[in-house]
Image: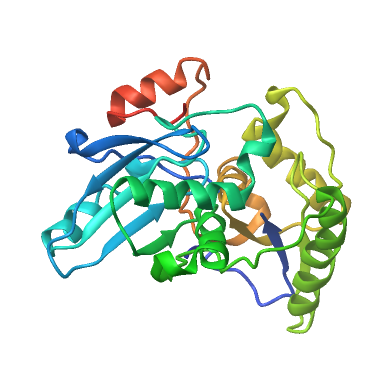
Amino acid sequence: MAAGAANPNQSDNLRYVLLLPSYHRYHHLVDASLYKDAVTSRVLTYHYYFSPAQPSNSTLLFCHGFPSTSCDWQYIAPRLNDKGYGVLTLDMLSYDGTDKHADLAVYVPSLISKDTVDVLGAEKLEKVIYIGQDCGCKAISCPTNYYHERILDYVFPATSFVQALPPMDFQVLLDSQLPIHVSRLAPYRASSKGCGALPLGMFGIGETDKPIDPASYVLSLTSRDIADVLDAEKLDKVNAIGHGWGCKAVSHLTSYHPERIFAYVFLGISFVHVSAPMDFQEFPGSLKQQLGCKAFG
């Protein structure tokens, strides 16, 4: 968590807290020769990095989040290898070197958990320590439900364990969760401390408008939208709090409208500097040139 004061002379007046719902950076595992491919029982090819453990040591299986790749673990893998641990970092389904499908049914978490077990089988690994980051936490939650005999232990760095649920209508799930997450918990906890709370349904999410034109989601425009919401509530200044992708929105708000902020808090992702305009079609190529690996499939 990173926090900073936008105005060191701020008063003790009642302030409103602005909550914004991740943006991940990409890295590259330096030893590309340790990447391999395995075909699962669903006939899907998974791309992954694997360095075997020394005798009597455990192997750790890493599942990245969105939008990332197995390259995220470049600083962790060599250190674990040096200590004799095995490391297996997956490119999750639809990322980088792993297969990509347009059929949403392919991405059912219980099936992805079977894919991870198939990769373990390809490397003749009976049990591993599962580690999941962000969306990867869901990927490792399912094996604990369906294939617990393959797990020595598990680690959830960012998101907690997700219990397996019976089949349901996803829209019904969203309708039941959003009012709890957005409308009840945050305002209740903030107001109980004497603070106001303004949790936003971000652009394209929940009950907020969902345009299909990507140009509508330019972050400088999003920061202007947030300022307009503050105007609608007659709020001159707030403490802005962002989580995940919301950190980028808060970053742009501090860059374009610093006069509207008392202080800011970044949960999970640090401040993101405003970048010069770029052609998004050229972005994946330039990112690969800088980092040495593809960030997007």
